[in-house]
Amino acid sequence: MYAHPKTRFEPTRIAPDTFLIHDHHGEGEAPVSVALNSMVIRAAQPVVVDTGVAENRDQFLADVFSVVEPADIRWVFISHDDIDHTGNANALMELAPKATLVINWFMAERMGGSLAVSPTRQRWVGDGERFDVGDRTLVAVRPPVFDSPTTRGLYDSKTGVYWASDSFAAPMLQPVRYAAELDESFYVEGINTFDRYVSPWLELVDDARFQTTVDRVAALAPTVIAGCHTPAVTGDRVTAAIAATRRSPSAESLPEPDQTVLEQIQAALTAPVAA
Ligand SMILES: [Fe+2]
Ligand SMILES: [Fe+2]
Image (tube, rainbow, N blue to C red; front, side, top):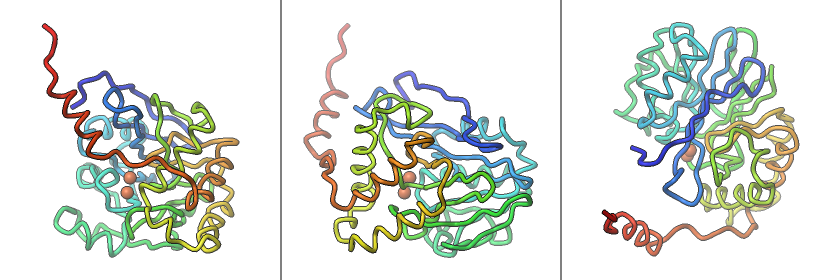
C-alpha cells in the first residue's frame, strides 16, 4: 500500500497501436522512483508484454483492458521470470481465454508451481526466435543487461519498438512518461548505475564481446525503446541510452543502499508522530 499519493499515468501511445502501461515504485518513499511498466501491442493478434507486479493488479488489468478487450488478447509475452514481470500473468491468462503465454523452457522450470498456466496454453520462444501475430513478426532479442538467464527482449518489426526488459533502465526523480523529460546526465548515469545493480557481472565481461551484445540492439535501429524500468525512450534518447549502456561495464556507479540506509528507513518508520 502506498501511504503517499501516487502519480497516475493513463497508458501512453508510444507508436502506432503500441501502448506503454505505467506503474512505478518508490514515489514519496525513496529519493528516486522506478518505473514498473508493461506494454500492449494492438496487432492483428493483440499482444501483452510483461504483466507488472501483483500489488498493482487492479490498475494493471484496467489499463490493459482500456486498450484491448480481454477476449481479443492472443499473446502474453513474458520477458523473464522476475515478479515485476510475472506478477499478473496467471490472472491475465485466466481473463484472456484465447491468449497463449509466450515464455521459454527455463522460465517454466524456474516458475515451477507459481505458474498456473497449462503447457497447452504456452509457447516457448528463445533468444533469436520469432513468432507471427497476424500483421507483423515479433523477434525475441536478449538485451545486453539482464538479471535472469531466461531474459529475452521483444522487437516489433512493424513499428521498430524494442521492449528491453530490465535493460536501458534508469531511475526518475519524479515519475515521467518519457526519458526525454529527465535531465540527460542524470538519465545516462542512472542507466550505468542500474546496469551495474542489475548485472554486477558486467565488471567481469570482455568489453569487446559485451559491445557485440549492444551492437545487436543498435542494429535493430529501434524507433522507441520501451522497458519495464525506464520511461519511454524516444528520439535522441535512443542513441543516448545505447551509448550509455556501452559504457556501463567500466562506468562509475553509486554504491547500493546498505545497512546504514536501512537504519535511516527504520528510524523514519519508528519516529514518533507529532500530535
Ligand atoms: Fe529482472
Ligand atoms: Fe525487472
